[in-house]
Amino acid sequence: MYRILLVDDELFFRQGLRAIIDWESCGYEVIGEEDNGEDAFHFIIKHQPEVVITDIRMPECDGLQLIHKVVHEAKLKTKFIIVSGYDEFKYAQQAVKYGVCDFLLKPIDEQILENSLIDIAAKLQSEKKQSRHSLMHHHEDLINIILQEQPTNAQLINYYSNMKLQVTEQYYFVFIENNYYPVIKSRDLHQIDQLQNYLELLNELLPQFESQYLYPQQGKLGLIIKKSWLREYSSITSLMKQLHRKLSLLEEGTIHLYYSPICEGINFLKEAYEAAEYVQQFKYYDNRQLFDYNDFKSYTLRHIMLPAERYKQLLQEMEENDEQRISTELDLLFSSFSAEYCSIEAIKASLHKLVADCLQILHEMEIDKNRLSKLNTVLTWDHYNIEWLSLRNLMLTFLLECGSAIAEERKEMSKGGIQRIKKYIDQHYAEQISLKTIASQFYINPVYLGQLFKKTYDSYFNDYLLQIRINEAKKLLRQTDLRIYEIAEKVGFNHPEYFVAQFEKTEKLSPKAYRQTFHSTVGE
Image (cartoon, rainbow, N blue to C red):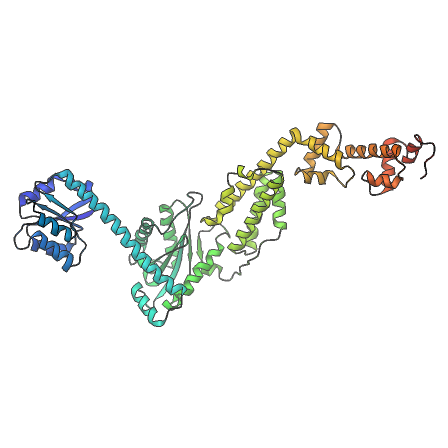
């Protein structure tokens, strides 16, 4: 609610104005009345109402003199509405010169006045936001200089004075991170309304906290906290628990708090900032939400990706579309991130590689990746604030979608694709093919392919391949003079002895005897 003062030498007019206007619905409360400009000026200096409605012609100090004193002498930004019983152009001209918001003639039209009040309230709200925004940006710039540049001692003294920071006082640096995915896809912590909500909440816990100690940075909010403010708390962790509880009620996402050890004096604030920044590297280590630097300072981060073998089993389970085993293998992968002390950048690289490998499999199977509902999210997840469990669930959903797409493709193949496989065998029997190599070629589980082949053609894969090779060998024995070892090579056998054994097993006579039944003499 904005505060308003009524100034007019006619008591009846002031009382009537109070009665006819719905002040509350317009966003105001009337905090006083005055009957002359001099008393009104002193009231304005003392109580500083946002809006004043004043008559022009009054004893001692008229309305225009009052406005001049408030605006030009006291330098206040009070908004004025002039009401007058005289339609004089010179008054209107001066009113414009002084920045008066409106000039209304008596008798007052209540609807016109209410509309004017509503417009002024909107303007005040906009100016308030802009003022807060400018102030916070100013403080943000000062903190940036202190934390990220190398200011001179003279500059530091000036910055500390602006920030109300004492050189010898002890400080903590805290980062607030709202892991809003999957609640919302984006969040701007620089929004003035959001910052104001945080400021009000912090004032509940720390009455001395002011806006200059807020530091918006890359989707997070930094706080400078003085140790002297913690008298009601047993430790910084005790405050963090209270802050986390209240923020969790305010926000929809999962709140993470990262906080530094105490820094002995303002000259070490940069080190405290770096400590709070460092501990963010451990956000995917478990399901915790409070991250005290002291709990992690002895750990050494590794900036390397996990070995390829860690992904191999997971990709195999994905191809086989085994939901339970996909979930189990994914949990093992995330556990490896913690066990190996992987940095966030290493985790990002590892998960992007996993996604790329999945998409490569889909590409080789000619499956349209755009059918995956989580495709865009898994490609850009590191653009969001996302906590451990949500990230794990996102990856699980993506892997299950990939597995389902592969299973559907195989189902379609079972309807018409098995004929393609048989045709492939008929054309490539002379090569070193097997059930395993063909299953790999067509991205089908070997066991499933063997079962499907037997069901469709009433013959086991190996028996069918052997029979094709023997039939082709018989043809070559009848129609050519090629030697036995040459024929063996041409139909896919590496060893002539094995070819002869398989031929005899199938045809009940040797290749040589078979040829002799068609030729009276053949040189071997």
